[in-house]
Image (cartoon, rainbow, N blue to C red; front, side):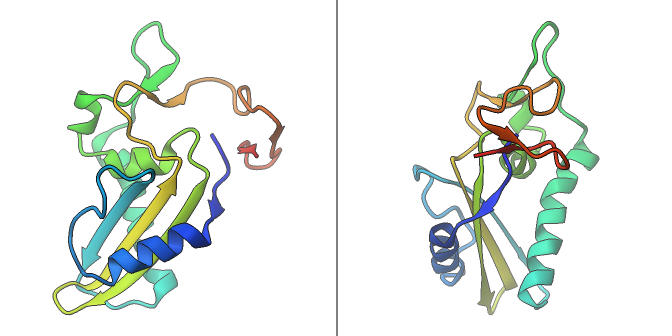
Length: 152
């Protein structure tokens, strides 16, 4: 898995979409992944993003961990996995996603509307969310010894 880096480009795109207060994906055919969440609280921006990301990550806790199919190390994203309602989590955990940017819209109906965009996008059917195995085993360049994430 890759270490995530903040992207001003993705933040700008996410903010532009969040400001529209449209509860839908911005571009289903875009070259980025996207998660969004609306709720009726107006937290400060950091608290709102933390709350939402923890909610997306908790899909794994409440809906069960993914596991590789028997005899494979690839934890695949497919229709049965997607139908479990873990698509926000898989986008966060996607093996080669390393850029993220988020925006927060202040909307009359939802109060806080958080949009995060990711590159490269995840949630590609039949592709691996990640490969099971030793941390850093598939890093091309460097590995962070503390986090065990690949660096680019």
